[in-house]
Image 1 (tube, rainbow, N blue to C red):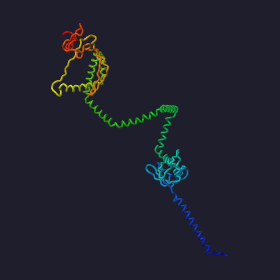
Image 2: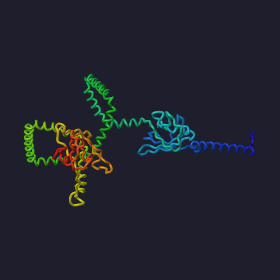
Image 3: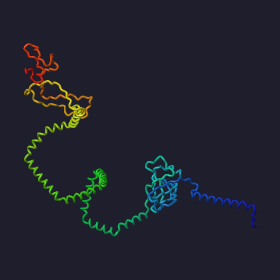
Image 4: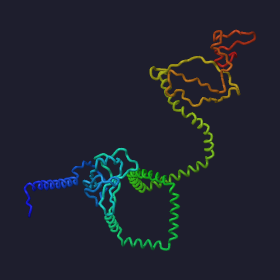
Length: 412
């Protein structure tokens, strides 16, 4: 006998079915939202590289030490390379040093690429910050890229020409193995000798570049000089007759000078030898020549005022008496030059009026007033009258007139 289902039995079942359906919908929705990373709070980073690779796509993995920490959001190919925008877990970002190198590679030859943060040799204590732009140090080459490069290479080198070249090389070295080996050995010896001079060679090359730049800078002047040289050459050609006449005159002058020197060579040599002492003395005293000449010129200007050349007509003289000199005696009065003061300007050519030049005494070998009485200071009586003898039988000292005439006490 069939059991009838009452209304009270179906209501709980319908509620349970509805709750189950809603639970399934919520689980599916949460799965989709989690798959879309709606609940993730990831931070952005930017990776710069010369290229992104052919297998790099959006939503590729971002890993650190083999653990996935994020994904690729966008890839932009630009003129200077590729820009890859990525998002990573902030908690994982705090464990990545700021100096971590970044590589773009794949686990297999044909696998998809990923962005990998590697451990540096010396980790920076500062973690990588959000929004940082990092440079990729390496991008793994794909097989198709290698094939493309190989294809371009084969197209560029033209295999038939390469075959002909290799055949020519093979024929050239056929039977010359010993000679080639000796050449390679000699080349190794040369390189061993050159290797210690590499630093010098590099320095010379660096200096050579500066010299080349200098020549490049003066090239316009050099070209202008060469152009002027062309004009000079044309001028020489147009005045060829005059130059020939000049050369003939120069030859005649040379012959005359040769004859002059051959006839008077000994005398010229003797004259130069005699001039050596004078020129040596002149060379020693040459520092004071300028100050002497300029000082004399200033003395002339001062003497012009003193002798009436500027302020008054006529001349102004100062006169006085001078004691007479005794007669010349040989060899006592032979001249002598024993000055040893050396060159000295003593303030010339612009002397200080408040400073007196030192009194220079030189040994001339003769004193004309030696033994003469000092009639100006030691005479006890009038200058012009005769003196009484101070001792019996001894003549009186000479008068001033006798001294001035050099009579030395003799009766005029």
